[in-house]
Image 1 (cartoon, rainbow, N blue to C red):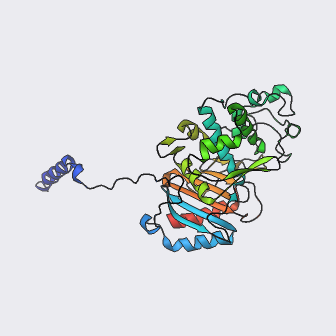
Image 2 (image 1 turned 180 degrees about the vertical axis):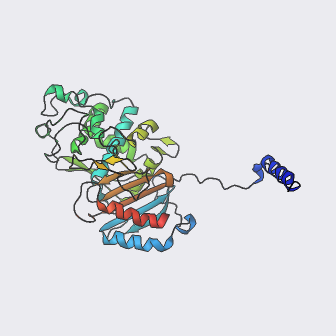
Image 3 (image 1 turned 180 degrees about the horizontal axis):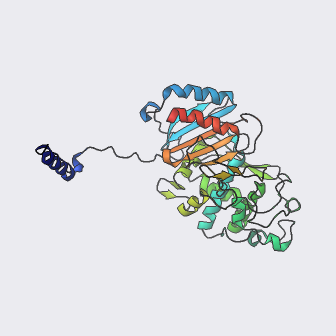
Length: 354
């Protein structure tokens, strides 16, 4: 043993002092961004990622069974899965429902970066007094940030109408979280602050810069967004990359990071109109109850999501370099954002990617 130990020490010293530069390494793949104005989009295979090919068909069968119209999986920007079901096609638009909230949050951040507004200013600075029917002192408590975080304190039980008569007081701004369509007033704030229509500013500053298609359409006094599924995937890719498209920082990085972290201390699973996984508790739309545990237990804890009525989904997962899109009709019963479908879907996704 006395002869072996010096040999092992010497070997260790040689190993520690060796030049690692001679060891071949595989360079990390750069995030891919599909060209603007082109239908070209690079792909990669399930096999190349070491995923479980045998679990792909069960996932697709489940999606088709659950009224899905489109499903896209991006890894580091490249398409791994792209499937259309139930008569839908790649060029056919579909509605985002409340997943469009994240578009509003994103454009609000762009307008702030350009100096047109401040999210900490009160809404009445831009829309004037009387945009609600609550007492002026209470109205003046409501800031743009309260609209971004669903903490306006306005009554969420009066439906989608956001006319002043329907915006009524329940609690002081910042003291109550409630899922409410009053967030669309941010679109009016952006329009007033920039001197442009919401659609024009959105198209110029976000849609066209990342090669999306789609349009805002009026519906019951609200603006509903419709696009093809790849446009939704483009926006998801921008979100995965913290608001940066190739070398162009579309949305300020610090704003986007704030948007995808807990924004208030009531609903820990909510940022700036983004849903957040991996928190210790969460609230659901149409409820004041707090639920302990994470939003979607079977999904990665760092995931943030755009969730729309009847199961419109954008999932962004930085740790796995994933963007996942689901568009379609409601999977089960009607829902406003999150549903049991999310949990089962992620169990089946995990069987593929793990």
